[in-house]
Length: 174
Image (cartoon, rainbow, N blue to C red):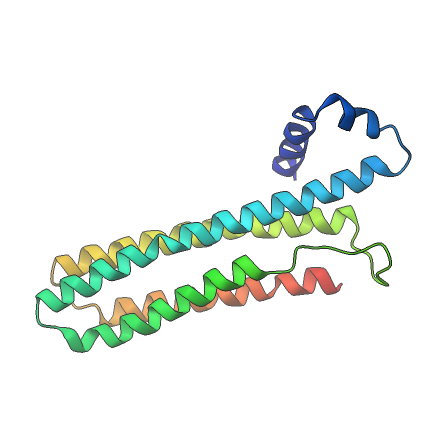
């Protein structure tokens, strides 16, 4: 929560004098804070998706290492892993923004937006572990190690990330 507040304070500090004056209009300050929270959450999810995008290169390098060693049959599992990685990227990029319009029946309050941001922020450790796993996969392929079990483990890790991310919807529904 303090991370979100410090980022919101940073956004406020960079406002123009006109934006600062607008904050004195009743109700406007809360509206702007909500909009900034939504924007920070979008930026965070984009960062998570971009970190997962880095795995594409690692997967291609793994496929190259396997094909150099004449293990083309093992690349089929890597294609499935690549599809799961792509699915994770798409989910992160297209997730609901926590938006509620002026005439929407259900409104999303600032506390819920903060919960959403905190949830997405906690996904950062999942993504960092996945990136480390993809780097290890590439290293193991170059060392000519058997990858079958490790690929299954990475696949399960991606499934866990998607399952965890699906919990985000319950925050929006509650």
